[in-house]
Image 1: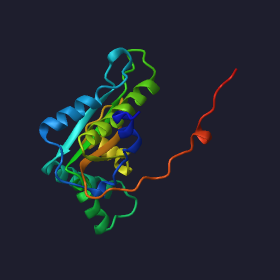
Image 2 (image 1 turned 30 degrees about the vertical axis):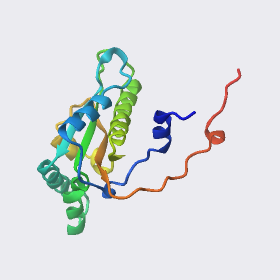
Image 3 (image 1 turned 90 degrees about the vertical axis):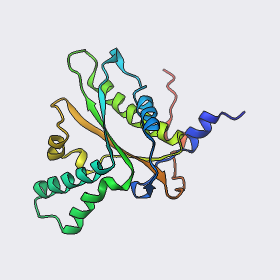
Image 4 (image 1 turned 180 degrees about the horizontal axis):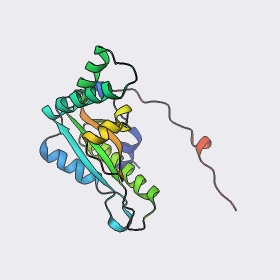
Length: 191
């Protein structure tokens, strides 16, 4: 018996950001993707995440911020090639979504549950985009941990970046990668 959902889950894979081009999702598709991303376990319904969407010229403007912050934070002055890489970083895909983990300390939900909920939001975002035929790449890289980028994104003290999800049309199909063998990662507890 085949199951289309399981077939999809067993064959989906990430795309390298450099392999993502246009077109990107339409406005309606992006709404569907983000709505799906928000349908994750969320103990006490505290919504411990939010999304920042970069599209169009906003990607280029954010790239300028990346280059400025890199130049300010690096101990040695970065090369012009490296600065240009940062300026073009968000141009690798038509849409980039920052998933911001927003910890709520007032509601009594363990922090780890909130962080895991943010991770689930990242992956649901990928799954929804993949289901619509788009390629995705969920990554962090240096700028997810940069104090300067935290300032640019105006993150609160309770917030951190769970990841940047690049979304676009995959320019080529990537081969599957090796996956772990169940015998290496599963044990059955018998008391």
